Length: 145
Image (cartoon, rainbow, N blue to C red):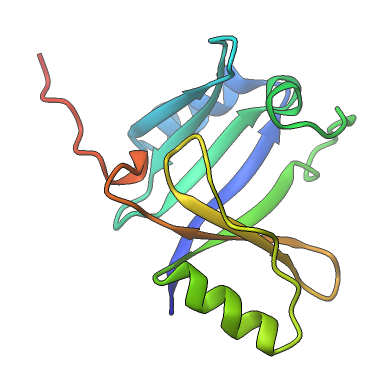
């Protein structure tokens, strides 16, 4: 079952400015950050409430981590995908495939959530994500010191 919008993802060449805007300007707290396999900070998850997030990734480090091509980013072109939270990923995958929608293989991401991908008719990427007991999105924040 598709539950809700899980997150929207942006790539950027100005990570510090984006963090200042979403955390400092809009007031969204950072739920967690993600590092590359080499330990470089590449992305932030901003908590928008009710397990809904805005992801912001340094484009060059994200490409280094996951592949793809570094692209010239012009204003308004940083949108990468949106994500739908699902329950029962295997059943959702089977249902979509029965409706003629191609679905990638399921895998566990570095955030410990199960994911698969589809595309709409215009080729827009849509991530399907099922949270697990280990998902970083569901961790309680550490108590303030």
